[in-house]
Image 1 (cartoon, rainbow, N blue to C red):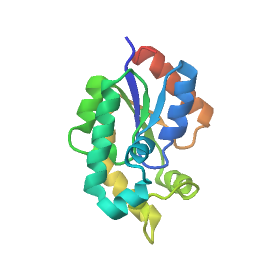
Image 2: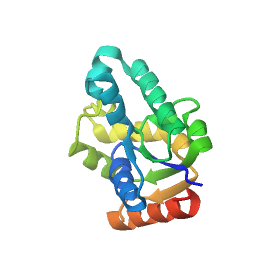
Image 3: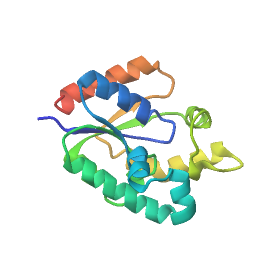
Image 4: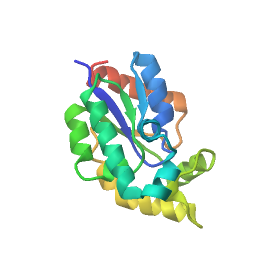
Length: 172
């Protein structure tokens, strides 16, 4: 029986990149939770944070994830802070296979610099801020059912390992 496949990890750990590729390879729908919230709210994440605050965003994020988990099995990539919200990892594990994409802080920061605006990474020292996020969040990430080292390996190897997990542990 197919289960959701949920990737967790720091911003820049590759959740969306790996998730999208895995979904294509196993014939699943892919959902980036931040993009789902943006569509539902009609505004970008940075505006939600600026106008409504993090608490409101986390509530929206939780509701969107709940709806996705109740739907047909798919591949999900929540934001980096989702896993650290009370009860979210337990709820996800009841409904799917959670995979922690573990990466180095320097890699995560370098990847996030190349991409979109990240409200919780706005800092004079993004490396220190990422260290703080990892310290806060890693206890939740390590609750995952599986872990893939995504620090210095070729992307194709990481994707292939995730596809194997999808087939062997999530029923795809």
